[in-house]
Image (cartoon, rainbow, N blue to C red; front, side, top):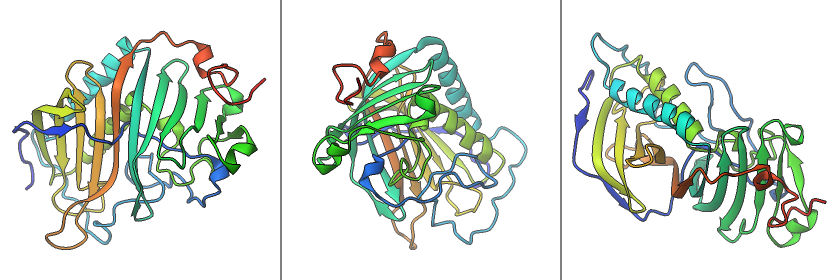
Length: 303
């Protein structure tokens, strides 16, 4: 498997998939769930998800160092770097319906749906949870450098809503309860940065297969799917299989999914996380009011 060439393959159609995007996470602290310490360090990329690293490579040996010549990941790295440059130059803000599904401590959660407003400078996020019912109506705001570095959140209904708005450090145990990533990692720019970080790390090793699938579709959007696979379990790798879908018109990643190695011979890859950005609308001209809890369109109860 070592040193295989980048190949272009058949088209890949996802249809109207109920799944998300970006890299991120958070549920209200008032949910009262336990949490694992976030972001433990390793020899690999610095940002590690809490609540679940790959299990299929536990006890596996080191990966084989990359040989001479062009690495299979080089073309994917160039696409990602070009995409990051384009995002930084051309996109000031965007809205989207974000769908995420994550495996935490071995358990795959249900899909969560959010309407999101995201601004790049200063990095700002407004979220309104659309479902499931347990989180419907919940709102979250985070603005880099504001609110003492905290995010503001409130529940949508029920007893938890009586608590009102709470202020939490994004990487605190309560904010990270049941989440793989903090809100500070949400968005297509952050997703592209992390893809570059992981690919640059994996470029040190062989046993990497990369395929490009033009004509893929996500929620009706035409995309190019880049699939990266590490067929042999190695402790150096963070996934067995990953796919990123680049919107051909917007030139941004609108879906990411990653899988663990099968837990038994001949088994299916195990989904670890998936994120999809749907209905993306760029450069809305968002202002500070869009990320202000005092906005009368929101229900934070701020005076």
